[in-house]
Length: 520
Image 1 (cartoon, helix red, strand yellow):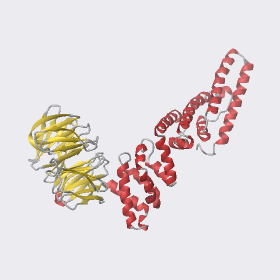
Image 2 (cartoon, rainbow, N blue to C red; image 1 turned 135 degrees about the vertical axis):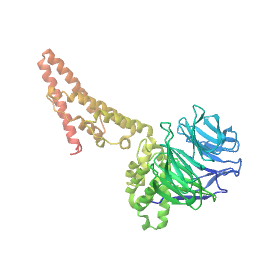
Image 3 (tube, rainbow, N blue to C red; image 1 turned 135 degrees about the horizontal axis):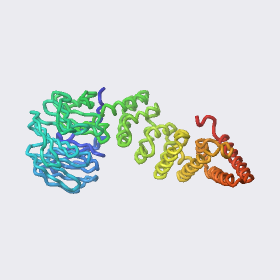
Image 4 (cartoon, helix red, strand yellow; image 1 turned 90 degrees about the vertical axis):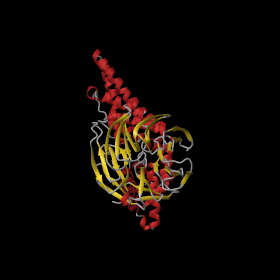
């Protein structure tokens, strides 16, 4: 399976480094400074020829680190300078660890940055590649040495001579290292024996990286001018040919694309195998070819933009749900894209992409009204969902989730605040029903099952009257026991007759209102 090329941008000069952030791609252009590229259209949104920049890194917080000849400069989300750190020499490489530390390396030194503080260690080697996990930092040198540095101890605790330039380091489920001779090594760091073995072999490797999810590896093979995608076992699952020699790469934060820079000064983005397959199948399912190839080209770009925007909150496989839109996909995707900013606010926490697709089938107007309800009542709907979860927790033996409307449907149907009151009332009614249900034989009454009563409440959209009746039954149960203990037969008979009348009325209401087979 071939991966899909997405975007190609001609830069001013061959980049020395590249990093894909939450919104933009940054490139280090050495003596020509740095550039910021918009990843969907390829527009260069910022071009700064000074200072010379040799390494770039977007943090997970959206700040941009620039490695210069003697400083690390930190820019905020608006690309304005926040502060800077002085370092002993040119910054060769920077990475961010999972615990939000930024690590940087250069000629004989390693720097650890946390917040606005920096600590610089003397490592004694000229290092130009770095990766970190916990207290361990992997360092790669141009003379072929791989070092493991312990931040707690402040020293190198292990080293090995690979006899070829270390071209890439990446820490995922385990540490990966590549060298210029094309070896890709896996290094075991769990028991601190640091045993390593060859995971894969190519002619020449210039860089490699785990994807953010840790289930895929991308390798730039300079001798063959291509990218290879590997699984955790080192087996190649996909590749894409490039128009130049790759030098540096990075995954998108969503793991659906890779950016690679080439020696000829070009920047390309490439779809990962899984994401490329999703888009390919969606385009095919739309049957857009009936309208012409140009429609398919436009749809493909629109799908990539949609997936790119929603991927932080939606797993790639979930986008297969869009296949259900069939031939209406192109026009309905337009509706979705118009509201994608609103959709991002509520997807995952309140709704799923499957929910979106189901509503889109009803047309754009239906989708607009539905999404407006959710966005305007987001806080309330979250509370409503929490109350429904409480209901399912206590009524799991008598009730299936499919038998009760969703929080969004309830909010649409009756308004969110009223729906919230209904669910709270249903919870207390169910608890009372379980209490009285256990006394059926004792009182000689026949009640509808508690689960049916709850479904009835949601069907009629009203609860208080039923709750009052069930509460009265609970009171009568206690009163009957009291009078029976006193030997007051007359009172007990009156109580039992009243209880029977209430139970019969309740049973008739429920049985009449519920459609046949609703609880099957």
